[in-house]
Amino acid sequence: MALNINLINGKNILINEDTYLVAWKYQSSLMASNADHYYLDCIFKGSFEDGKVTEDDEENKLEGLISAADWLTIGKDNNNSIKTTAVLGITRD
Image (cartoon, rainbow, N blue to C red; front, top):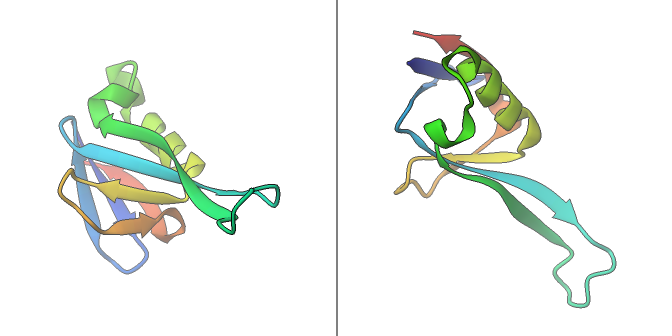
């Protein structure tokens, strides 16, 4: 299994069964008791295998995760996040 996340800047990111992903969703609360009204909630953390149910839904699961998230980090030691609106498409190798 190998999927490519194609970004609008022309770069491609390879995703395989061992790829570690962290997905974040934007949250806002005007009711927060401190001055931090804007923050991200982690909605997924783990390898790509953790998020899929069958071999037939690999691309579908990745599409769903990207659709639900606002930011995505790929790889355990990666300090760079990708805004999910920068994703142009997903292709299968």
